[in-house]
Length: 294
Image 1 (spheres, rainbow, N blue to C red):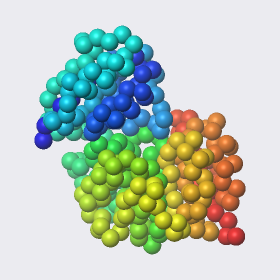
Image 2 (image 1 turned 30 degrees about the horizontal axis):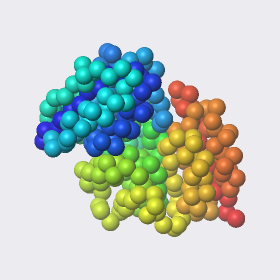
Image 3 (image 1 turned 45 degrees about the vertical axis):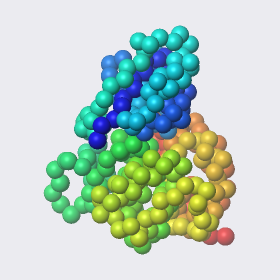
């Protein structure tokens, strides 16, 4: 399958605004690159690369109205210049090669291998998760994801019901299923993330009856053994009542996506939980809480 690639050169401070606009205009995916052409395929939650200048490479369907997209983008730039936009055709293989060069090949907790789809199968009886982020990024390379994967690989999840809130590529929830969980509810507001989660679950042999993929407004109030939330500190605080209701008494809540200085503010929104000491990696933290049994 071929795509239209629209590459936009801009000050790094405009990344968030222009990324949102590109998605609004119909982009199926976006990669961020610095002047050295180093893509960011799994930035930290809410993280902006500290480059003075950047490129956004957005993939659009072949029938996209390029003239309209170009006009909207130029209208948003402080100094519009046609030379800042580059339109070209790319094949799926081009995109796959980009993320494949930065994909993770790592064993977590001595129980779970996370590999690209084309990597050789490791020797031994360990669980293997092959991940292709597709149009929703999340390969296990970022500190927040890696800490959650390591935590999952060290638990006995047999028979558990799990919610992955902000599923992205589905990496955390699918890992939980491969490690013994019985059921997964993957929640994400982005339709592309839901598609990526479904594709990755199918590729990893997860039976469809074991996974439900829904938007947040479709989420029922049923309680679960484990809720995973690798999202921003702000949403973790605003969603506290909803996430709390999803955890059964005695169940676990694992949160990441916050910086170390945000930990106390986030956990203060969860008075029903007893939190373990947080884990830290690259100034990011992950914390596990157990809900009181009432």
